[in-house]
Image (cartoon, rainbow, N blue to C red; front, side, top):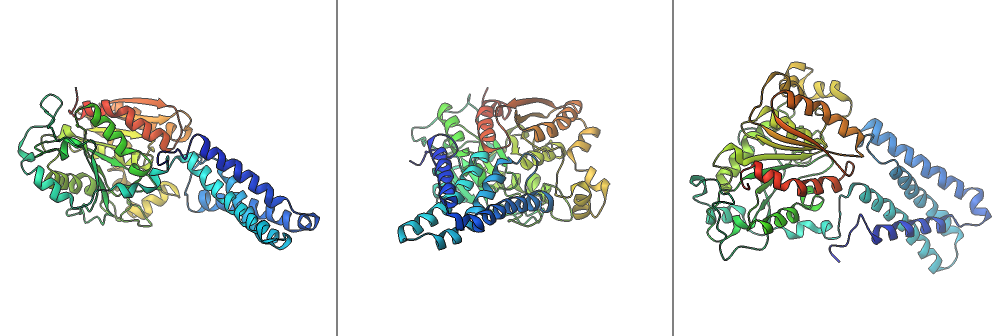
Length: 435
């Protein structure tokens, strides 16, 4: 039951059919109902959909042209269902019929939510809705200190020098941790850390590579767990490689849920680039004893605005993140209102200060012979697929060893979770774990 799909198969189909039937029930009033209440409810639903579009795309910039338009129809239906509820209760007799009317309105609302989830796959299964229940208990520092006190002095762990112990766990563990911004002053929310079976085995003594995973907006560090199947992907890879997988760090990019996200830039909003390039690696090396052998052990990957962040860090800190995976990233950091508003709110109008950090500008003036990366976009994601092309071209021109791949899918978690699983062998070769 926990692995029942919420995005494919019979369940979402059944929810949609029930929602359609429920809407027909709400519309099945008599002549009196259709003189006033029925038309007003439908007009109100249409107005609600238009209002949602205006707020989402014109005022606040919640979504862009990749947002599936069919969801506005579902949103309008949900608003209409709520508006039709009261007049239907008034004109419907009997307790059972009135309860059925309330249930019908709720079903339409659930149908709208289900369709949004089908489009973006934010919760692919029933179990993904309760991902936090799988978090490990206890302190990660106790686990790391007990097993990896000497990790900082041993060579990088690879498939060639690793011998799995008899007590190798069957799966990794996920911890919710605080990674302080000692140098940057960044006020980070809680991060998530995945420790693979090889890290948890016996007395430890591993020096594993580190993969920093960047979430998008909307979203948070836990999105990679609930929506991206990260633990399953890492455990699956580890099961095929004697328990070996990277230590995965999922930091918070929202500054603890701030209204104005720092966009992986050092700006007047926050020094989030320094946080990700200095504070996070220092904490990982000191606390976890991972990625201490050489810079090749470090990689960064992200999706959507997190893909943009990935490219920012790869361009500005190639000595920290010489390996990257940019999935559906933008051409440059974006806020609603465009570059004009970004320059005003983040750099007090200073174009030069922004250009010094913007990946596309940095790639134009520097060379990166030691950087290896990959760009992945969905075949049906016209907007972000096009936005990535100039960054890819600039990366190639700057000497990066990069490739661009199109994958089946759009701008959603189906694409990103599948892409991460598919690219794991490539990533682990690049990070020196596999050959």
